[in-house]
Length: 124
Figure 1 (cartoon, rainbow, N blue to C red):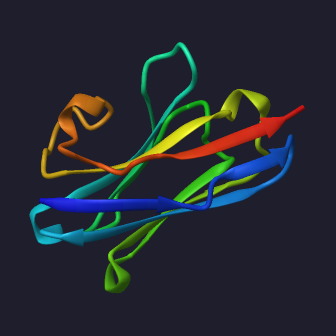
Figure 2 (cartoon, rainbow, N blue to C red):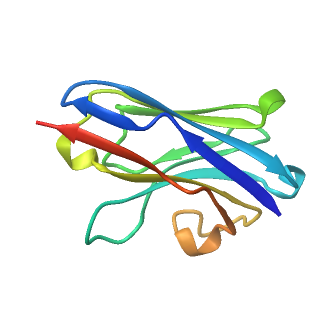
Figure 3 (cartoon, one colour):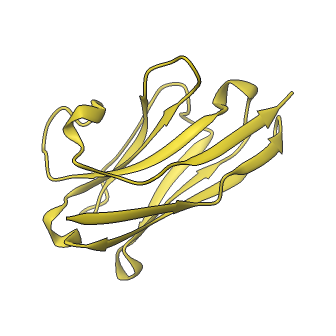
């Protein structure tokens, strides 16, 4: 089992920045990809970004391309999400997730381990 703990959420004005962190522990060697998802009230959980531990292959949702940057520190078993030029529509609970799957990595159903989530609120 992999344990994930997110931090770094908060309240920010539109155009501002936040950096989320996700610290992984436990059987991290069993996972290959880390992802960030978000869920706004009344909406389904949606993919934001993902990164492979090995090789660092990265993918972003179109809605965050050019504004968000995902990165990793393998030595610390930590994944980050730098969020710049935040918009009110970015308001959501952000979740970190881990998977050993190779396909369907935009589908939250393919991620086995999840953090508790961290709230990001962007005011207009």
